[in-house]
Image (cartoon, rainbow, N blue to C red):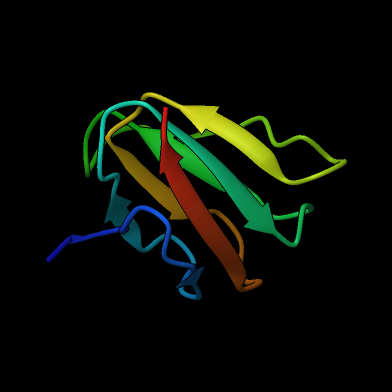
Length: 82
């Protein structure tokens, strides 16, 4: 089961490689800690690639429909629609 991240609600991505659905196709997000590794894909079982995260504030943008935490370190993500 793939859960959807809600816009504006802090979501903890605590499990490495657990896939989450994005709420809208194009999102701006913020992640804490900024050293987190987020990965996105066009399919649940597809190839995941790292997202570019701004080291100064944790901001990232994506148009991919799926996201996951690529490491074992918990991170908190907050999304807003673009």
